[in-house]
Length: 413
Image (tube, rainbow, N blue to C red; front, side, top):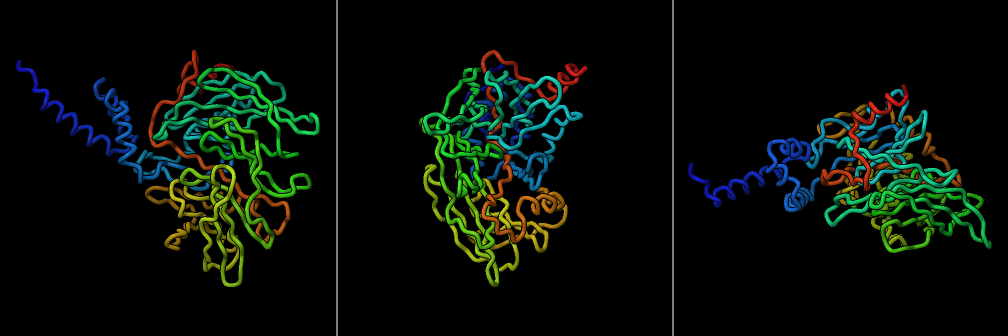
């Protein structure tokens, strides 16, 4: 039998690659089982970079949550092509109350979960890829989770992760110190360090995780005086924990929120005015200064609270109307808007109107002028632009979702 011409084979393989690379990740993952050759080709650096390059203008799947409640979900994007909402992948872990996912922090698709009953065990995983690793117990006593951060390469592929816990603060020579315990997937060990805390009564709940850094929103109170962000960087150059006041802080019935978009922390503010609302948007530059990006008037009367921003399009902000009880997306550049209906189902997204109405009144009281009211933070769970397997710490076994749930049942029995 004549040996196939190498030139023809190379051409055919090139054509197949050009076809596969234009498919969503969910479809590509199925072709990995065709043969070892296809699997190796799909997992190659060339294929990954080509895929990311061709899909750079396409949003990845993302969801907007508050703890276990899903507000907005955009799962049907061209990058992943998922058949259901991101929240549903986590909800399957709610096994008779055995798990409680810690959705106050995730990073590049990874989430932190812990056992709710019995012996406490903690896991970091990617619910969509159904991959999990168990995190060993922290050596510190009286600690609590702050969040999870990730290290990525130049195209956003997750290379490593770190889990962060904090202990009880203490006073030393007139300064407040914060004990930190950091678990690294690269070493498989916890390390302990103490940093000077610039805030007297810090809030460690609902941090924003971005670019290896945790941002903790601090409400104005009798200690902190002014709202701001406490910043801790775990992947960049060693820095002390520092505090950044929020810009343009005033009362006058303003509503504010913090979110991420296009790789930046964003601060959004609405101010009710006669005949409409003033909408202002800032982005944080180099973790040190706020840059005003937009200041536009929107012709809508009443109380509009900013909910979040599109994580990949910094021109799109999401607003909640307290007076009319609806969710609206607003394009800052074109000033076009879209109002989402009750329990809206579209070809690529799902809007849970009941959840929005239920929680937005609680977390953003309409017409409140409280001096200590802080910005809204709804959790943006965003998948990475590539389906690389999650990092596995040394000598730690990777667990799939089915095996993890079976293990929980067995241990409980």
